[in-house]
Length: 288
Image 1 (cartoon, rainbow, N blue to C red):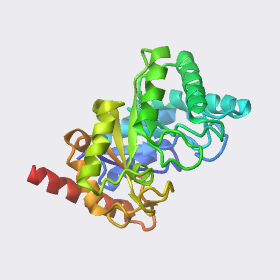
Image 2 (cartoon, rainbow, N blue to C red):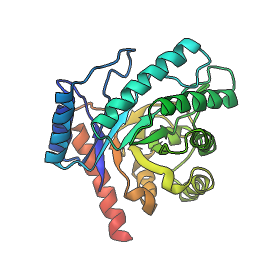
Image 3 (cartoon, one colour):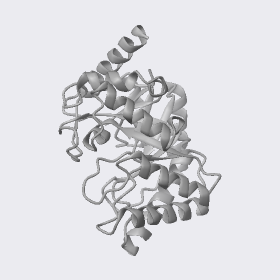
């Protein structure tokens, strides 16, 4: 199973590789800078080379860089757009330098304007980023829970963002990161077989199944349709084991990187969650 975890880069980005590998993971997700500060982290060439070497040593299959939370390319505030542009451009260059496979961004909020104009702002700003620097990696938009004026809580909106951006910058590679807790909070009840089929049909009719590149694997502390983003341990939340079984029954999902963003409430929380996902994976593989 391609299974990863979000790890801290405290002490140096290369240490995140060892932390993931020591927990039995073969994939890794990191922030290259603080997710909640407008501060551009400078990473030396030496650190980058050490990260690449450690990745090779531990044979990590996939490396994912997650964008900080503050950038909002859908904002009507010009100052926020400028800061967001600068942050994502800087972060993308680092992600490429460490040979990351994917970069994940939350689409953002239209801030009580409207969805269409929010999507247009994101497309324009993202296109400007890609005209300035077209990354080697694949750029992913993440599914969102749908609270307030957040965009990207369904695949129709995500398809619009991707299609409009790639029309402007045809040589950029784009895709989607599904967050299980987010889609559940947005109203996709993946516990039910018929609802799971509707989800897959919607994906097929919008972004396309091949566009899904990563599964952020999180149970939900909140009920289906809550629009609240609160992650829980695998099998301990409202999604439960059944929901993850249904996700893994989709062959094209099963072979993707499954990245844990579950709470780190105990020292071995990541390992416990990994083992639960692996057990579900083995069950589905055994019955297929």
